[in-house]
Length: 386
Image 1 (tube, rainbow, N blue to C red):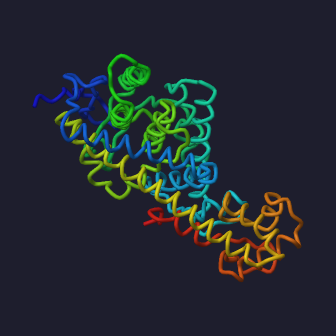
Image 2 (image 1 turned 180 degrees about the vertical axis):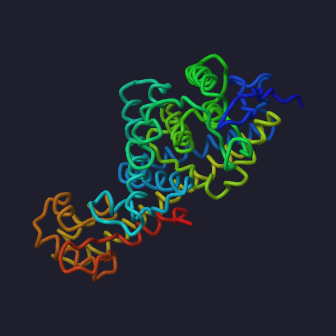
Image 3 (image 1 turned 120 degrees about the vertical axis):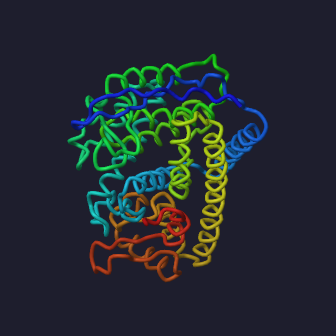
């Protein structure tokens, strides 16, 4: 098999050293990829899994899951970069509570949520997935914390490197900043191309690698590169809602992930990467659909248990509905969402707590917070910080 030319090296200065920076060839690869045999079967399996996920969620009230699925992806994507925030920490942070993990970590994950939601809103406004939008996402992602000093929303104006204490012993040196700007312009043209015949899933897999290889920002490249996948699939209509949390797959197979990225840069082996990527899409879509099904079954069973309480069930069912939208709630927030008075909500939560459906997690006599335990347990699979 003739491999595509992955790119070329250019000697440049970085940190007072001369290093070989890699400049990737524009997409699509030349000669064209061979989407036949096992790779075609992987593409078909991934496409079918995405279709089943879309179909399942048309029947399962997807709005109930979007909030939690987006936050699951945010936590996983941020954990890859070293944050220690859990899903519970993020939900507590958004509720105005102090999380158990470092507050800065929870704030960083919250910014990922804001970036994704911003990107989706821009797409709904028919704004194209472009370098301008990519910079907007980055600006939101790095709007606070340590990232605020890393030129949020701006492509880098200096050389960066990956791994190693200095450029000379780095694992990988991306393109010089002037070349990186040209590479991003090429990537934008690829994102907008409609005449290369590439399926959207293949396009998303190629674009992710190209973005990570260019590494156009001083920080946040990994998270923006994973956001790019979701937004590409949503823009193309393969996903109507961001229900695919691919970061769980990348997190579990991170060594293989990095080996395949380097394999493309050294040998142009796009097929191996695409096989891995498509397998991840298939597994993640199947798991997301199964999770939605399990949650729906849980909600139905719990609703039946509440209904059996007779006259006390009415307000408890409304509180239960609020907890389906947000699995961790304070009493005031539950009052707002359920449209009930404080004493009524307190009584309903005591009923749910007695039925072992919710758990109070502060131990306080005031400002109490409740978690829909089984909902969060199912959602938490694969999210636990390492």
